[in-house]
Image (cartoon, rainbow, N blue to C red):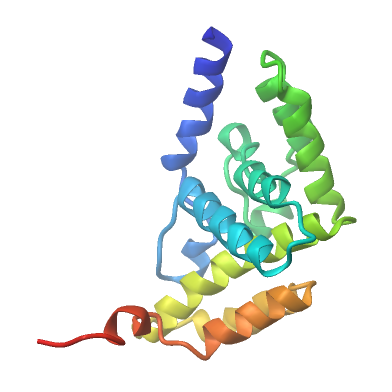
Length: 183
């Protein structure tokens, strides 16, 4: 159980590590754990739209897709031009002491390869999580999201991902709670 406790503490650090891309955006803030939760929930919704999708695999893939960042930190695209990140090494060290480490490694390899529908949906959910944040920032008057949104939307690989993103763009970030508002 000591190895499980150590793994949980290590993954817990993702709550304290902020995603670095927001510095370039000029507004917003999100931890890696917050992003991973949102990505996992988007995957859950995606799986419910198509019963042929392995829901458990999709959600679990989203939960682990950024765990290497507990060891590497979150490098944005500019930083990646100047630094080499050995994600495979980070993952091998992270999982070496747990009996289900190979399961995590396999999920990450599948996610990174993008060859299965679950992997492509998880990759889209990763981007949709960012689209949600950008749309909220845009709706609340931040400058910058309008430049980023087209680039992020171009990364989407599935029809499901593109449809969800389009619906997000057509919906106000606060519409969900204003719909039934009354005093």
